[in-house]
Image (cartoon, rainbow, N blue to C red):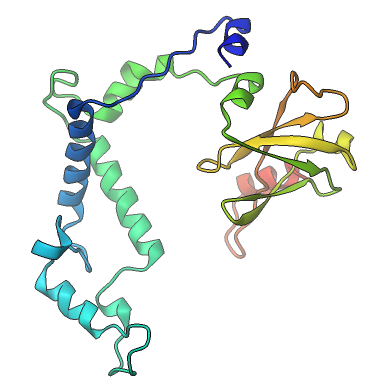
Length: 226
């Protein structure tokens, strides 16, 4: 892997955050996130066994457990958030935190968003496809179909499509490398013409349009995959 990076004029350095100080940074941010969300329905406290709010305990007790007899009707929506609502609340809390001034030695009163815009954004480099290919942790072989590629990622079948290079390989066997945590795109190598995987190319996840409120930009992205 390091040889591949060197061939592109880049140096690969891996930093392992193993110190107590690194753990403290993560815990501090999680604690601040909890402060933003402790007012929400279903909040279980920072130590569920010791400081779970009584209102949440009562709501949990009303829920039917597997194997228990049917209890009095209770709508979980009265006391808990849906997955979509929780995701929205987490996004809102994180957006609040990224704009909040911080007083540490690195920020000195600036917010994470301001630091990203003024300093760190200039160092954010998008890796070329040949290097992204080296960093992906999982791989599978697949045959290119008329509508693109279908592979299983984390137990779910996902579709990837590209109107140009992938379309030239219909019916051919390819090697697909991907990151199961971030499956928005994969890299592909044609096994017959490139068995050493020296010329990978990226293929994006197929765009699925909302049923009723798709935007012109979403239509354009979906058309690009057809």
